[in-house]
Every structure is written in structure tokens, then in C-alpha cells.
Amino acid sequence: MRYEIIGPMADRFDEVLTPAALEFLVELDSEFAARRVALLDTRRARRDRYATGQLPDFLPETAAIRADPTWRVAPPAPGLLDRRVEITGPPDRKMTVNALNSGARVWLADFEDATSPTWHNVVSGQLNLIDALDRRIDFTDARGKRYALGDELATIVVRPRGWHLVEKGIAVDGRPISASLVDFGLYLFHCARRQLDAGAGPYFYLPKLESHHEARLWNDVFVFAQQRLGLPRGTIRATTLIETITAAFEMEEILYELREHSAGLNAGRWDYIFSVIRNFGQWSDFVLPDRSEVTMTVPFMRAYTELLVATCHRRGAHAIGGMAAFVPSRDPQVNEVALHRVRADKRREAGDGFDGSWVAHPGLVATCREEFDAVLGERPHQLDRLRDDVSVAAADLLAVDKTPGQVTAAGVRANIAVALRYIDAWLGGAGAVALWNLMEDAATAEIARCQVWQWLHHGTPLADGGCVTDELVRSILAQELAELVTGRGAADRERAERAARIVEDTAFGEDLPAFFTTGAYARHLGPGRRLAVSAR
Ligand SMILES: CC(=O)SCCNC(=O)CCNC(=O)[C@H](O)C(C)(C)COP(=O)(O)OP(=O)(O)OC[C@H]1O[C@@H](n2cnc3c(N)ncnc32)[C@H](O)[C@@H]1OP(=O)(O)O
Ligand SMILES: O=CC(=O)O
Ligand SMILES: [Mg+2]
Image (tube, rainbow, N blue to C red; front, top):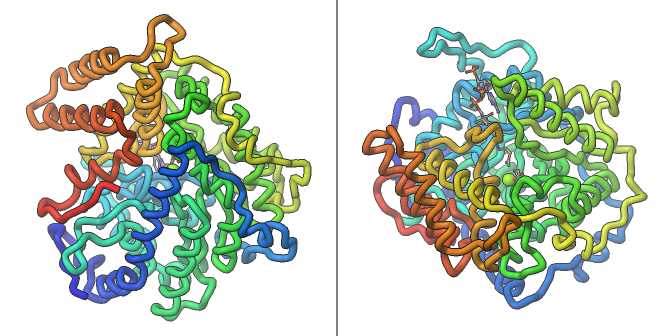
């Protein structure tokens, strides 16, 4: 197999893209590429079945795994025992320093939802991780502000991109390589030994899995990679995000597949909501109200998080909470509301038995810590809280029609505005942005554009009169675009127009594309030379 670097080489990229590291990626690709493609086909077939009215259920063929009370996941690895606060964010240079110094126990260095997968972001993110581990990342910015690592740093956990994405910057035999394998492989290759020398290990978060077969693929990747790099089996640890409705039916099986390498499960709420719409959006009893109304306390979300905690603790695995989207604001009143909402979210999670949770911003670390301290005290986790009281049936996970709330004209406009502005930022290289005091990333933007599609598809009535029509959404998009481009130069205006076309293509059409990122990446991001990329 022959590899080729398609992306341009910038300063120090050769330290990441070494011949040995690239050979390792090629080995991973040749071993696992075909299985990845087959699993993506299975995803499509499953979605097609849901389109004909079938609904998911717990799997009969894995009942024995669920019924067997004896198995447990591996004990927590060094640096992952106490995870009461985890901060997330893209591994850009400044945020790497800020996240590691934030006081959180863990930093999720994110190549997925929070990163726009430009070639520069992908390679420089890896470089920043190497530099952070070598303590070579200190710098002074243009304003003269100095960034330097402190003494107490968060444990690094890397989230590679999901199985659906490819990386055009590296071609193997003329085709783009799996983005998951690039992010995982480069980090493991360069940083596993560095992490072990520092008393931790190579740790990962696994995003957007849809089944235990996909967990098995990751486990096989881990076994192969450890053997190839001479790392003892079980060195790698991975927390799996349960952020698709189909994975919620296979939580126990996912832990089982990864049990030698598992570090628990995380309730990835935003992608979870997105996956419900993606899979069942065409059914009228799955129409959701305004995005702001789909909170963690509505019945189908509550069922999923309760099941997640109970499942994890039965198997000795950490249960990690999700992301409240409110970010601090410079406006004191807005800030007070944001902190209050984040506190309520973390209090509920700690009370429900989660062992820790996520924050999006350093200004939220203390709030999350206080709520978990109040429940955990000196204990590093609450794995002993078995939640035998929890009983969740398939119908509870699918009780989307019990979600209270309405669809309003303001909700339609908010979704269009968020989708447009987020995609515009993403095309510009920013994978996470604060919009109207909320953190927006690929997962939250996917909800926004899918809800528009869903409401259009159903001609959903609006609480304030009228209903969602093609005319309405197009006129809102035109207004929002006009507002966005006001005062912009030609290049930025053109980028916003491209973003608007992506919104049209992925939210206003007959069919609902599974992800906006796949098609938008194929057409608009990544290195200049075009490789054939299918928008799966
Ligand atoms: C659905 C999911 O998957 S959730 C997980 C994925 N999403 C994320 O990880 C989003 C993470 N959060 C962020 O990216 C940011 O907080 C944003 C984009 C939402 C807001 O960032 P900003 O607009 O820079 O916020 P703000 O101006 O308040 O930041 C203040 C300081 O905190 C830093 N900061 C903010 N968020 C983070 C973070 N998550 N990690 C590290 N540093 C951060 C900023 O860099 C800035 O640093 P400076 O004072 O040295 O310049
Ligand atoms: O990745 C997290 C989510 O909520 O999506
Ligand atoms: Mg997600």
C-alpha cells in the first residue's frame, strides 16, 4: 500500500507526519478500512429499516451478556480514578494550555464536535498535544499575554473523529484514510510512551458509535495497535459516548466489547437528540418542540441517562455526565442565569449517580466541582451506587412523544440562525463557538438543521400561528444571511453564502442527509486537491 501526504506541510508538521507514524497509519488502514466501510453500510441499512417503521429494541442475540452478572470492565487507570470535572475543547495552542490549567481533572482534547477538521487543525492539534506532554507549549500571544503550563494538569483524553469521517490530507492507494484512525493513530504513536512515562496512559473518548459492532472494531484496533507498538494489552483506555439512540440499546454490549480497555460511558446529550431526529425524523410522533425545550428532564432523555448510570455501575465503569451548553458571559445578569443553569444540571447528574461531568469553559469548572464535591466528598467516584431502582424499557427510550413544549416561530428562526452561523464558523476553521450565550458545536448545530428539516417535512404548526413552510424557512434564511454578511469583506461574504447553501442542502431538501459534516468536508474543507470522498 502506498501513502501520499496531500495536505500542505507547514512549520513542524514533519514532527507529526514522520515516515514511521505514517507507516503505522497505513497498517491500521489496511487492517481495518474494509470493516469500517462495512459498518457504515450497516448503519445505512439500519436507518432504512427505521424509515419503513421498524423501531430499535434490546438485542435478543446478546441477552446472555446482559444477563451474566459476573463480568466487569477494567479497574480505573492512573489519572482516571477521579473524574468529577472534565473540560472539553479543541486542541488549539491557547486552549490546550487553558484547559490543562483549568483545575478540571480531565481534559477532553476534541478532534470531533469541537474541531473543524481543516488539515491545519488536525495536524497542529497533534503537535500541540506532543508539545504539551513535553512541556514545550508555553508562549506569549500578540497582546503580550503569557501562556504557561502550571504544576497541576488535567489528564489528557483524546477524542478522535467518528467512523463516518475521512481525512483527505493523507491518501492510501489514492483514497482518503479514515479520520478516526488518523486522530487515534497519530496520538497513540507519538504520545503513548510520553503519557506512560508521565504516570498516565493513552486515553480516548469514542464518539458517535451506533452499535456494539463498532465498539468491537475499536477494541480490535486497540489490540492491534498495542501489539504493533509494543504496549501491554489493556494500556489504552476508552470512554464511549452513548450519543446515538441505537447505542442506548446496546450500552451493556458496548462495555462488554471494550471491557479490557473501557473507562466507562458518557451521556453525549446533543448528538443523542440529533440521532433521534436523524433516525426517526419522518415519523409524526417523533416531532420535537423548540430546541430549548428538549432538556435533560424530558422523559426520553431522563430514561437514557438513568439507564446509563445503572448500566455503568453494575459493570464497575464510570458514568460521566454531559455538556450543559450555557457558557459564561461578560453581562453579569446573563452570567448569573448561565451559572445557575449549569449548577442545576450538574446537581441533577451528581444526585443521579454520575461520577463526574463535562464543562465547556474554564469558568464553569468550580460550579461543576462544587456540585460533585457535595455528593462525592472525599470519594473519587460513586461506583458503589448501583441504581437497582432503575428500570428502563425500550418504550421509555423511545417516548419522544411525551416531550412537552411547542414549536414557535422564534424556535425556527433560532435554529436557522445557529445552523448558518455555526457552519460559517466551521468553514472558517472554528469548530466551537459561543452564539447567544450558548456553546455551539457540530452536535448542537446538527440538531438545529435537522429540526428545521423535521418541521418542514411535517408542515408543523407553529404555536404563534401558521406552520413551517418552505417559503417561511427560505425567507428566514435570507434575512439571517443578510444580517450575517453586513459589513463583511468579499471572502467572508462568500463563506457565509456557502454556509447558507449548506443549510439549504441539508435542512430544506426532500431527504435528510445523515451528517452535514461529511458532505461539507468533501466539498469545502481539507487540502485543495480533490480526492473522491463519498458524503456518507
Ligand atoms: C456536544 C459536545 O460535544 S460538547 C464538547 C465539544 N464542545 C466543546 O468542547 C466546546 C468547548 N468550548 C469552547 O470551545 C469555548 O468555550 C467557546 C468557543 C464556546 C467559547 O470560547 P470563547 O469565545 O473564547 O470564550 P471566552 O471569551 O469566554 O473565553 C475566555 C477564556 O477562556 C478560554 N476558554 C474558553 N473555553 C475554553 C475551553 N473549553 N478550554 C480551554 N480554554 C477555554 C478562552 O480561550 C479564553 O482564554 P483567554 O482569556 O486566555 O483568551
Ligand atoms: O459529544 C457530546 C454530545 O453531547 O454530543
Ligand atoms: Mg457528540
